[in-house]
Length: 128
Image (cartoon, rainbow, N blue to C red; front, side, top):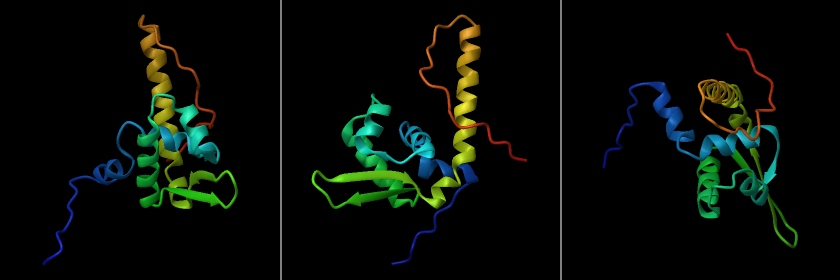
């Protein structure tokens, strides 16, 4: 049986296949700054279900974007952080966060009432 060749029409398709969806970019933004346990991620993203969080973390781990560290102790301790490969997404994630903040500011200036609980703590990274 011949292997089917995967074809992308534009590079962003491959990017979105790995980090696309509602929750993955949010998870990755939280992991840019620190290593977090599952419960800490769940508290940082209150609208995600535990099942969805676990599924998204597994997919990101399978894509080598996130590393999972299991500590042999009672109770079990599991931590997640960006892999070295995942760190290469930091500039993209930073720009997405900054753009979203500016968009919220614009909407508020236009009379919409939108609350942003946390602004991105990572300084803007300039690239050429």
